[in-house]
Length: 330
Image (tube, rainbow, N blue to C red):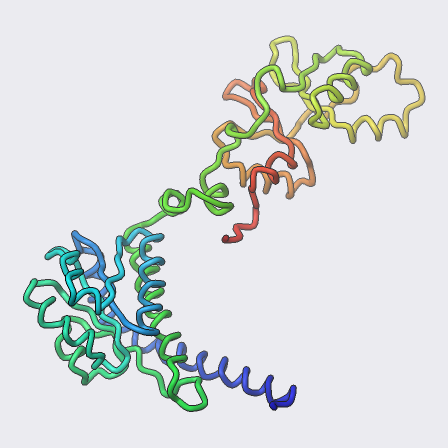
């Protein structure tokens, strides 16, 4: 049994070895990497990625990353490929084959067939003198000095290097295509990430007769009743032209009661905040939440182009809708 100190030492050793593997990958992002990015970027079809074992698992992750960042990709299992699934490859596609040794038999068997189809091959290999490397149009070197496995057998550092090279491809392609946050959102409509990038405030704001509104001369009693009845903890105050003049929150009322003895003659205009924070209806809900957190407020009024109040939202409604302001992923 390992001691506590030995366990920490072994774990740190793995992390250091894999960090070194990634560091050494920097110099391998070279002119071949440029050619690979340009080939994929100009590709009229899809990126077909193939690998088996640990390389297959990494291939699936790279496919997922590419699909979510604007590069259409598919995973092709080598064994399935030689039993009929090669039919998914089209002439306009680009194939990426992943094999650290460059001699994986299932991958090797695919190469002549792919070449007969006239499809370009990018290989990700640790052995640049291998069969796969020598028969590829572009070679990406993912070699590492050692595996993190103490036996130097289990794919560890090499798997990490492969994944990082795949991420480098996907993210560089993203930037080459000017892929935007809005584009990203279209591929992630579900969950908190999609809501953060897509949901606009007019989808969840209180609107119509549910908006708490009082006039400048509304009595304090009726103002309190409006705030209580509408259950948003605040009310809009409008002028004679029905444009926004201010806001009164339940916090304003509490502070008023603490410092004022006679409130019987007060009306809305006497206690309102004249410059409330406002947003437009097309504002992202996540942006609304960020504004609330920045100014430590719990309500926001939504106005139109002419300063008419057309909605109100409460921070609790945003949170209940799954909106987060910190951009956390699912």
